[in-house]
Length: 97
Image 1: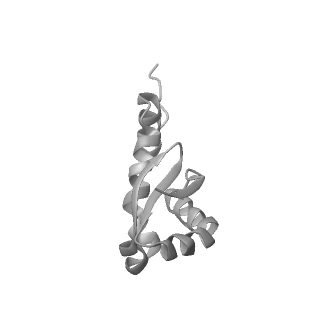
Image 2: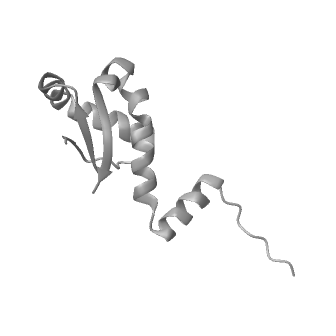
């Protein structure tokens, strides 16, 4: 008798492979950096550059202390927007580098 295999969605297969290789967090971090302009809008993204993600913390460099303070006020909303776009609670904090 022939055995029928369960069909998996390709995105689930890719996630499983990335996790198995131990690079899921690195890939999610890179996705986060690429999403920054889309999530923040061009004007804000031009003044605040995402640098890297480490331990699920997004590090950015703001053009000025005023921009850094502005982002600190909106930190929770920014994290929610990013995580929503990632379809996962990945980013837990944002810090200025």
